[in-house]
Image 1 (spheres, rainbow, N blue to C red):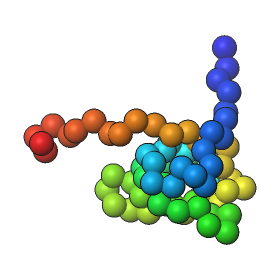
Image 2 (cartoon, rainbow, N blue to C red):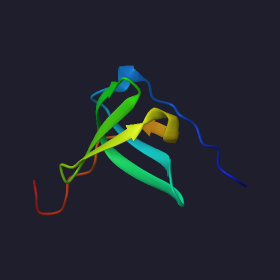
Image 3 (cartoon, one colour):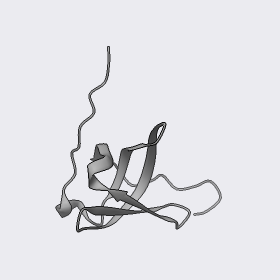
Amino acid sequence: MAGRLVIAITTHDVGARVTTRRRVPGGFRDAVGILESWDEGVLKVRKRDGTVVEIPEETLVAARVVPAAPPRPGRM
């Protein structure tokens, strides 16, 4: 059974933790992090390592809000 690709986020989800999948040359790339902004057709997602991924919305094929990340071992 094949999964469905659904974009289930909007500009109202800025500040939420999201997972995204986008088209890139040769396939797809995923990014999980905090949706920092969605302006002028570009989403900015800050990953756990602090890097920001810019995603043109026309390349987005799937996205949804996800729960907060579990605590990392040894970092309480």
